[in-house]
Amino acid sequence: MSERTDLGERSDAAALTAATAIAGLALIDVGCGAGANARALAEAGATVLGVEPDPIQAAKNRDAAPTAGVTFVEARAEGLPVASASIDGVVFFRSLHHVPVEAMDAALAEAARALKPTGFLCVIEPGMTGNHFPVMRPFHDETRVRTAAQAALDRMGSRLFRERRSFAFLQRPRYPGFDALVARALGQTFNAIVRERVETDEVRGLFEAGRTEAGDYVFVQPMLLDLFCRPVAA
Image 1 (cartoon, rainbow, N blue to C red):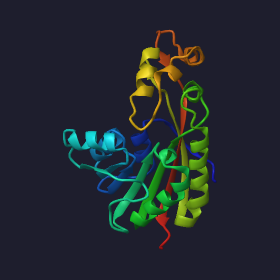
Image 2 (cartoon, helix red, strand yellow):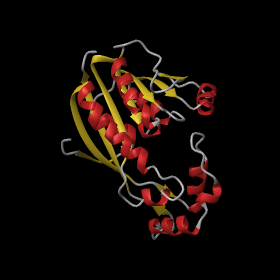
Image 3 (cartoon, rainbow, N blue to C red):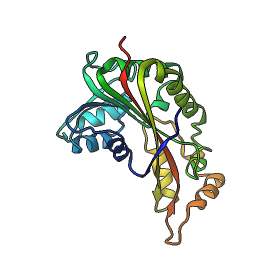
Image 4 (cartoon, rainbow, N blue to C red):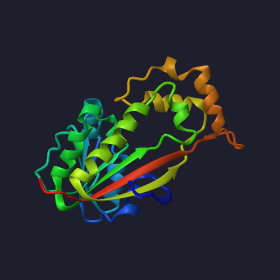
């Protein structure tokens, strides 16, 4: 893999728009969660299909107030509900590592199937350096699945696409206090995290590493962005 181009400090959606133009394009946000990034992409001029496999979150998305340019559906990454060669871009915002490891290759192949010959696949994944990952690891260790996601990109990228460009950017997760971390950990329907695993002396100690002079807590989270362009014809 080539050296990563540094994009500085950005949100996920802003990193994508720095890496490639999206205005006027039809995009799929795979594993869209509550849809914040899908809505941000629509605000930047794209038409977005937000695909969410978790039935609880998918139902919430359907019931939410409509957003111009965004449609939400319940579907899996391995079965995108679109015709072949019909989409300009497929995006995984921190979601590839949530795909079952044995299905990651199929999910990437499905993204390539959906793309037009001029289309792109963008995968954004959190890195495992910085001081935010150690705070999360005791109760939600994603080392195996994040490593598997990067391996799938390295394995499948050259098979499915003619071009790969790699970027890095930075985020600084901020919490007013420990209770905010607990609320974040327990607030995601696709993760079965219990309070007892979060509210431990170990996690509290690691959390203290982020304390600022202002009394809140700020951490460093490096992010990885890989942009694959021009899918290989099936």
